[in-house]
Image 1 (cartoon, each protein chain N blue to C red):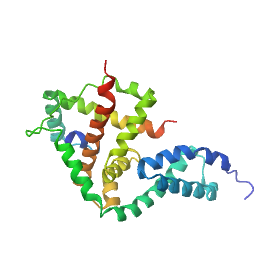
Image 2: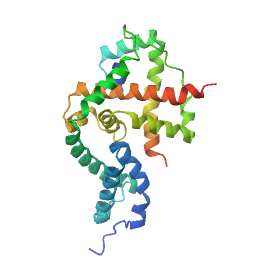
Image 3: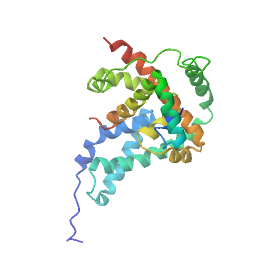
Image 4: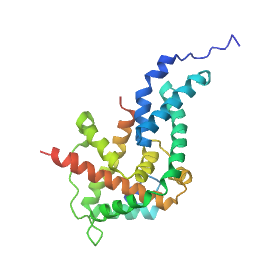
Length: 50
Length: 194
């Protein structure tokens, strides 16, 4: 959830640290994090592309 | 006032943006007839109000600004109709997402490495897959997701517009991302890796 919310609001300090600590040990979550970024980029490209 | 030099927009210039606007509207409304309506209303409003176009932004930006309002009107109207039918959608979506995780909350399957995903942008077949995945999202989830990602609204604005709580909004956005991620992985990335 936090990973997704990071795209929708600015996380507090504690949340940021928690997320970073978790990502450090969770390879799957790191992947999903890049996938979420990709989704955002893809929607923009889809919207703005010709 | 003959001295004022207003930028002149020709009807053809406005018409040229139709397909862009239609795609934009379709992303939000997911109903071709409603999208067509919203675009038609936008083009009419633009023609009638073309002297208000200040020329400070591009024509497309200006038209998109008008379209956003038309889309929100449609969302408001269809939101009232949809409240009765939303719940089944929600249940099956929640089940599908539960299936992704083991009981300890960890991923059941390892999400695959998408390599350099931006390469997919060049491939028209990727965009077909992407469209299909967007269409498969339950209507309410898709609405929240596109308000956030396509219209760049903040979650506060979305909550206000749809009358839902912020937490609910975050949950729906999270679901939308997980579902889209899963769909793209299955329909596109897993088949494409060497």
